[in-house]
Length: 94
Image: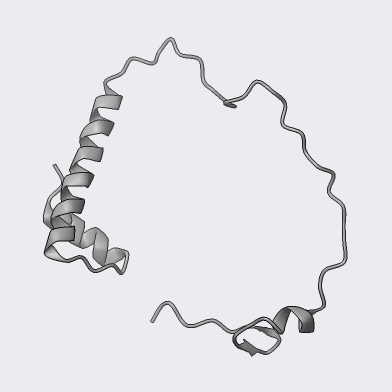
């Protein structure tokens, strides 16, 4: 069983904030997921062949053709901000 304390800890690690209602919802959902995984662990799969691909058809791969890329100036015209010739993005970590 997953506790509200566990969900709060996961939320803090993920930089998320939950209301009490959301916290209750996610606690129930995570508990259901953990319970379901426990049920899956009980399934005997000793006789089951591993599946390496869901389709028996061979996946065609396109040829890797080298093409010239767009000029940096043209790409940066669409950037909200640029710095030193690169996209400038807001900081996501302190």
